[in-house]
Length: 131
Image (cartoon, rainbow, N blue to C red; front, side):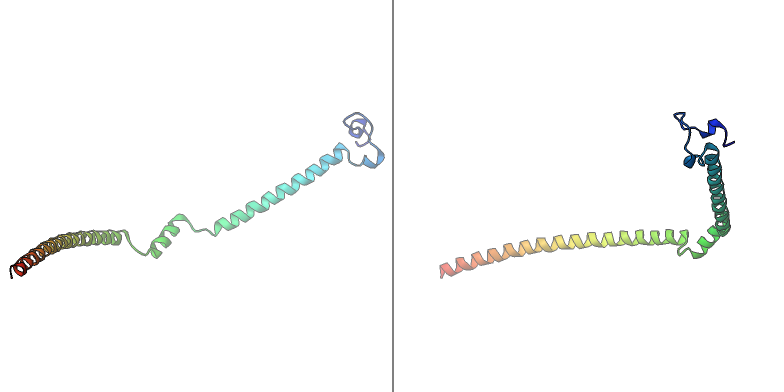
């Protein structure tokens, strides 16, 4: 087949020199098939590796059972904790409001005491001037 003229010509139609004649279209096709065979073998190996590794993964029901086994808090416990925190948050909010009211009362008392001090100081000056 390599002796056929069509396999022994360049794209321009010129004959292929003897040193390059070993790379005819048929030879290139044979090389292409070898490469294709290598690709198929590597894909087959990759597929076998994937199947082997997939067999090591447990089924979904085992995964969920394992997850539940290692779950730290259950949903009911989380709900109870939220309820507890909300109750104590309201208690602390009430205490904070009471504290703010007492703080306001102390500030008002300080203002009244400062006023009384000022009045006493004025009366004292008045009495001292009379003497």
